[in-house]
Length: 311
Image 1 (cartoon, rainbow, N blue to C red):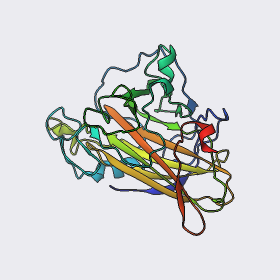
Image 2: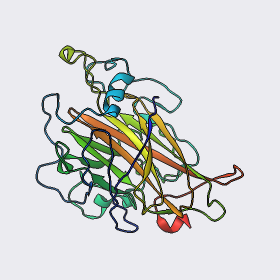
Image 3: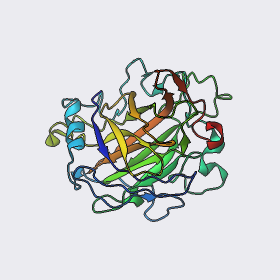
């Protein structure tokens, strides 16, 4: 996995404090604040119909890195966006269970669409709110945020904490048009004794591989979409540190560790971005968060989806 770490400011909807924070400084990308996304969004209809593969938004350094990362590798078979391979993280569509997960997006009732929200494409999970950039070629109203059962969970998904097979999901961000969007965590307090230390965050992600062998006119397949994991040391601040993920067609893991400094809380951002008119589908699951004190001792959070569980 290729990781690129860079400093930028970020905005996200946090349901815990209902506050917007500025986003600036994304390389060659728009600078307007992203919008909190709430449903229902009925115009235009979500999901959108596919369109021709064209690039409209500026190609950032991140987009070029994403395109180069797979060295032009095509889909495993035409139309197969997830490789049928066994890795240490999963088997094809299925993501293996791992310990110390504080948010697996599994609880059915924690998704907003479960209580009568008619727009299943504008979903959010517990304290994790959805947001999207809306400037220039990037449009917030074309992004789908939804839970996904067929990618990630499955009949071999070994999640011992779920009650039966009815509650196994991943979070999905998708669009056929240029977009930059994500889910932001609630405000997460730094536990007592870990002030001035570090915070470690990881998330599993899967980028749908849209390279098709017949698309010879597009060279290596214009793989310009990517996933990223941001941490804001200080949930009310305007600075986040990011790690990017460019692996496509199979489950991979993003990790990020930042210094807390004098921050009393953090916010975690899981994001997806594409500057192209292509079938971009990016899935996230199994968030882990650990705080590390000055002596190097760490503690994983058991729950990072309910603010009261973080105290």
